Length: 108
Length: 113
Image (cartoon, rainbow over all chains, first blue to last red; front, side):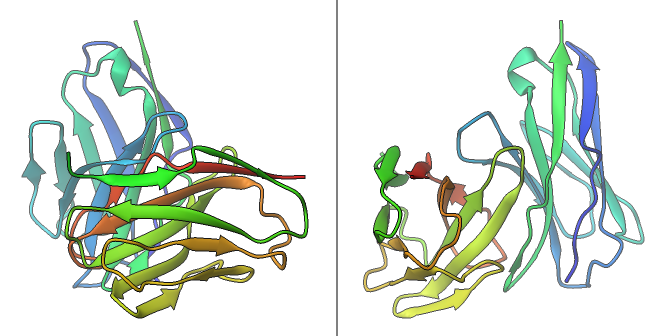
């Protein structure tokens, strides 16, 4: 099963870009990379996903390396409200493994 | 308002009792999921269902049971066989399993003493 490795925590200054890395070296060709975030004691919220191309939406950008073994979530201008746990997961038709995520601390 | 509802938000039970957690969605999604989260940990998949009257075990199904008699509903029963049932339980749904984003409910915090 493709699983993910993320740093347990990161700090970011308010207004700066937050770059959250994720390793998924065993990803298969038909598996997608999804990112979610969870603010304390709430259900996770979907952010963005991709297969092999870079993606951007109103919340974030997702950069996937050419070999698909790693990806980076970019929050272009982090705010205090972006403080949360960010999960990178790899999914196939019957695979959803969330892991422990990265706790992002956005500081004023 | 479309979304997923879980009730109740907090639930207290005595050890040895079965308890059923409710999950309802009005998003017309085919797939539904149950996760367990322990303090400071990630989410672990208990069960998921891709279609009505069908469900599969996740990574930690022992001590839990589910049913999927209606598309909108996916209740989870925590049985007395579950050794450590106190946890935060999250329900989610998606259009199809594994290919679309999951929408999560607000969760139920279960405490068993």
